[in-house]
Image (cartoon, rainbow, N blue to C red; front, side):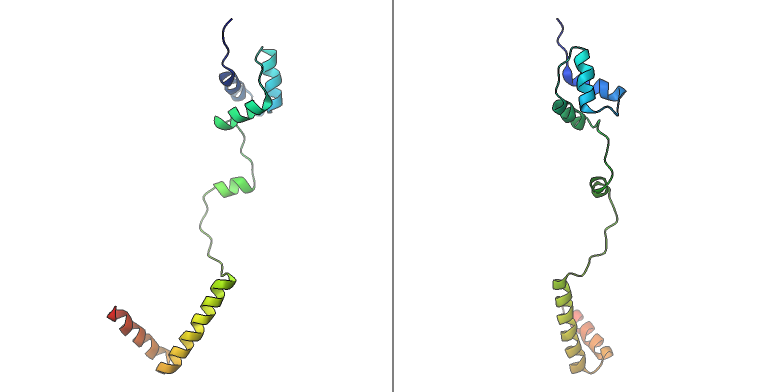
Length: 111
């Protein structure tokens, strides 16, 4: 009696019947004398890429998308607000915004 390659039988059947469910595949292969469980069929289909792709969250997460703009979290907003308060104090101490820009450019050139 020849030994049957169960994996190859599953792959061949799935290629001929791509919409067949694991239980249907198990029943069809049992008629051919090959005894396999639906769980094994599911793992083989996944391993060989024979499953249909689902739409929704998983497909959307796997698809490359443009990077979304970062949202301001409460912590970032608090840091930005504190920075603005400090910048306002600096502008007042220098005189006006133009003088503050000149001072910052001079500071940048020092480094």
